Length: 48
Image (cartoon, rainbow, N blue to C red; front, side):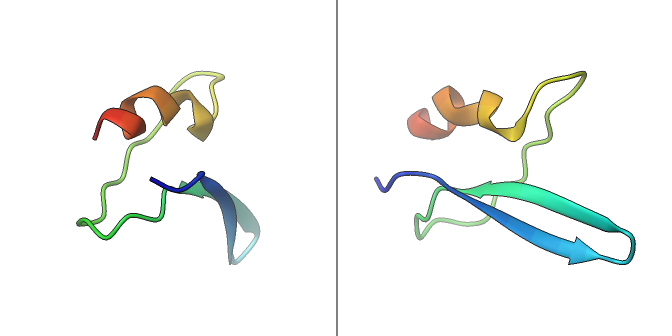
């Protein structure tokens, strides 16, 4: 497994960050809640 890479995508008026784990499996979108960040899913992503 590769080290996760933080990437960005710009949509009109907003810049969104996401973490790409770089595997060849199907895409999976996991959204964080409250005041957490996308990196709060690191432990789960390692197991997937």
